[in-house]
Image 1 (cartoon, one colour):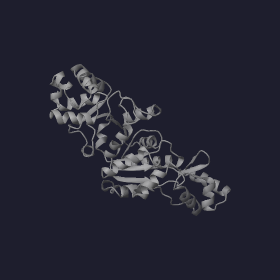
Image 2: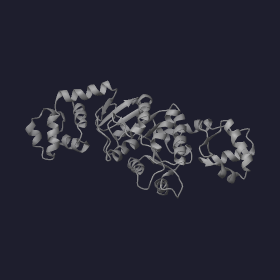
Image 3: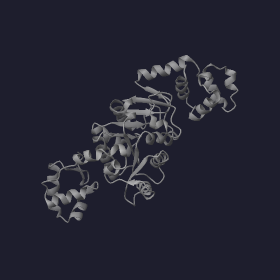
Length: 365
């Protein structure tokens, strides 16, 4: 048994967290001593409660440890510890980095330039549109999308990347074999096969409320910056933003309706100095590694040459997000009958998409 083996073993025991592992490391200096010391020595560790001591004794055997490795191999789960060369250096430098990571999928994605996109679980039409648009456009440029696989903005960001054939990483608040929420099981399976799923929590651990704020530091730690799309004034997305601030990462926020409770958090971030995002250039120009992609993004822009003046007016009205046809008519002062004809033509030209309720949005390229 080596120190990395001991880290994996300790992490696998539910109820033993990084705080306990740190204290054990301080006491033993070399963690392998814990594996070989007597039961009495363990019982004399005054800084541990009796329940933890009993777990250390009961699970300290080769059979238990080998079962962890066997299960991981059989389920294509890769284990990386903070002692391994494979451990991502940018994650190692954050406060309280996870000692052990469980990975399922293309683990090399942890070294890719990435952006985190997080937001409300109860996303509005506007929030869903913004998350999908930003995720798709960044994916087209080869940027990996990181999120937490939650309902709403997280799931849409992952799906946007996958739909473009891009890369995405999901950070779980449960064991890697216990994806949550179960409603996202299809997304989990798709990310596992085409992207990467990561957890710092033991195999078999069910989701716990306290795990999600904790995993948010990993979401920000693996990325170059964090984009917040729709967040309440007190939400997990803001916790991710604060972790990013602590880690010296760029914080971006998509502005929202001032009357919406789901935009109070993002608007507050902007008020406090977060970079406002109205297009992906706002992100690319702030991160040195991404600046070279600005020209490529401009080349990807849709070509509106050949459109009539009224068609351009309609496009301009739709560019800021999903909008009802009545509002388009109001903004452009085009008669509704003529407008319906223009909208049909723009759909035929593959420039816009109709959504339920006579709502229109620019079609992603």
